[in-house]
Image 1 (cartoon, helix red, strand yellow):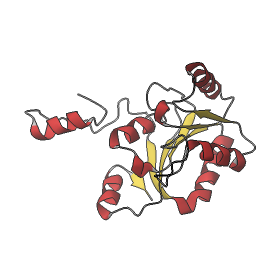
Image 2 (spheres, helix red, strand yellow):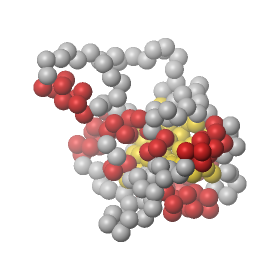
Image 3 (cartoon, helix red, strand yellow):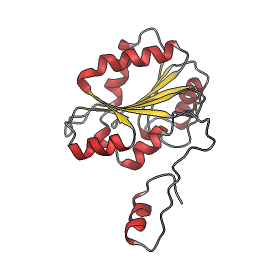
Image 4 (cartoon, one colour):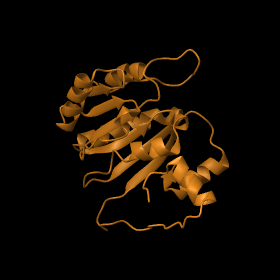
Length: 192
């Protein structure tokens, strides 16, 4: 039994001699739902306005990038440029930065600042996908979401929705999505 769509487990359900059980209700029933949105990079300003509104209401946000630094081989967003952009876009708020090349003490310090709400936005790589519990964080933005696998998206989405507030996961992509991909997202509650 797994809550995470691990590829081996999914393969076993298809090709192995396993039964599949689906739990289609929340337990406990008063747990707030999260909302999933798909956003093209061209509508980023409305996303920033949404993040700003959430922070004004006392909540916090994660913004996740697939790379730490710019790559000559791939035309995708990176954390270093994203961090500078977010600091410029949100000068009224404090922004943390966490990635896998940082020393453990530095990462822990930044995570503790975010947990204590000393910073309102956490810019990170997938280093935050497991073991991070900040109940006040209600927004998860995943840049270049098409670069992540289903398991990673599931784990990242799980960083929000840990408190009593409505939570939101925004998948940002610059790519045109196929109708099949759109349908898959819609089946999982995504709005465009």
